[in-house]
Length: 110
Length: 115
Image 1 (cartoon, chains in turn orange, blue):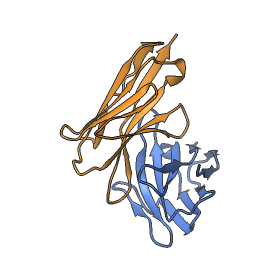
Image 2: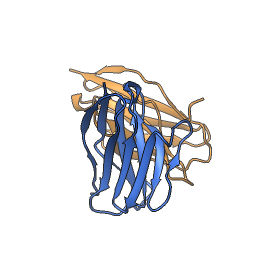
Image 3: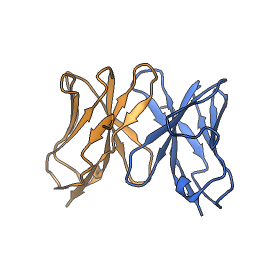
Image 4: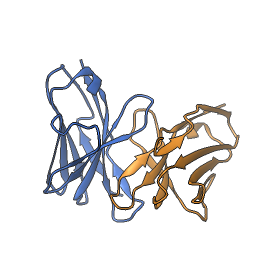
């Protein structure tokens, strides 16, 4: 079983749509969680951190469910510029290593 | 914010040769740096943790004699792919942690093609 699992997609949505991505992780001791965005042939960039209380940044909302070991990302009012791969990332507390999910590809179409 | 650079950004080499990739923290010191590899349509896979002044820690399945890591200063880590083969062709990315738990600064990556 992969440490961090995501549905690779692709998710093809029209502009303005709301889209949700899910992620599960296997290490219950994990403490820090993130969503990164990666554009084609570029390095990943931090989108937002994820907390149990939820975290909202504009059109983006991230949520963590520790009991289910489940992380989500909701994007509202999708823009063409949101097209990218979204990586679910878990940080190991003791080593600081980042464990990346496979990524979910989003394609927003006009 | 903090910046991490990588050099070269792209390299093409012949099979059997060695390639060195540099990762620099430009405005902060990094006692630890991470090296990742990403194959097409796959996620980033951690290869090794580079530690300033000591040996690197390699992930399971990564050959330490093939992927030589040197972290000689607080701002520079190098990854040398020795005796490169076409299957080593990949996108290599380094990162350095920041002061807080959510900060991780990634280099722009190096695209290696072995012919």
